[in-house]
Image 1 (spheres, rainbow, N blue to C red):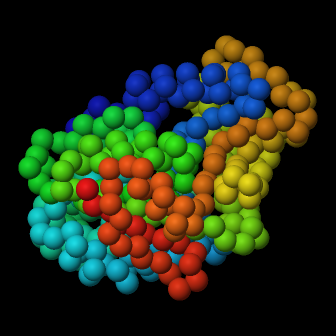
Image 2 (image 1 turned 60 degrees about the horizontal axis):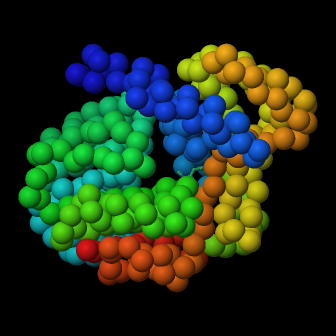
Length: 321
Ligand code: AVJ
């Protein structure tokens, strides 16, 4: 209620808005124009992402959900009693319910998300469905330093980073994030990380080029957001969504491609696009179990268990400090 009264949404949170402007002006001044994927998640973008998760081509969500259901008891036994569950990039907080149902008297749930309105809605729904659970929502960009609430001081922590959100980081960034999370969560903490696995390029291509065009709408919504929040004048019909699998880098790359030579204004600045010129909007790295474990070994975490579906599409890793 306080957050709603203060209008703590992305459009009006001055810290996040200033950084958005800086990152967009900076990113569009590079030779390869680029905008960080965290800016996809305004209220409309968060809703579009929820629709992506339900697409027939987008296998990660339903596969990870199945893995979590099948491993929930094992996860709960490893995590123990009275843990504080902290989720990085919690979105609609759907998957965490599988853990909350299996964990032994969880002490608290701390969802962290960059999208204020989506976070508050998800937190309210959880408070309704889990009245015994202390839910402390943190509206923040988890790629920056996040201060955990005093209410979970002294509690054993379980970090939750599902969905292969870690794939948005380059491998060195992923390593740095895991090292920082180890420090934030503290001694004795555990962490569950969902990681998408390398597979046939055609399966990956289909997952990011869905027939219904939801991924295209999600990508293009970034331009709508710039138009609204940063006084931009992007013509949405003059750009198209592109997603390709770069096998050499082991990653899906998403772009917005200019369909003609054109000039765009943002907050008084001018940007020229050639026909075919792109804005790089997202990387989504894919790992093998071995390559992810090599990365984890360079951080403060030990690998306790890995849960995988039968088809080896997706993996969930249980890490301990
Ligand atoms: C939220 C980063 C895991 O990379 O699959 C889905 C985002 N982009 N479709 C992903 C996304 C296009 C998603 N992550």
